[in-house]
Image (cartoon, rainbow, N blue to C red):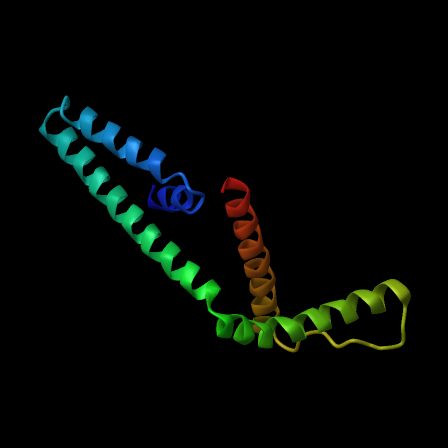
Length: 132
């Protein structure tokens, strides 16, 4: 549940999450002791998830606004983009380049993670700009 709450906060639905937490609190008042305790625990966990999501969103906003972060990220993403373009060009046009594969499974996994991260950040920024 905390993952869902964090996802909704990241998308900008914090008000909806706050209303849902309020609804759970009102419903807990009508329940017996055991169910009330369970609902109160759910509310406490949801509030902590909301708090954590807001802190991480602020951290990420500050991180992405810092120019040196992009320089550092570019040191990894730039060479990966060049390698990726060489692989595609070589496979499409049949050049005699013989572009080497990444040497270890860990490096292949890291490359996939970097590409996923790049599209995740780009999609998130685009979604935020559309909302605002």
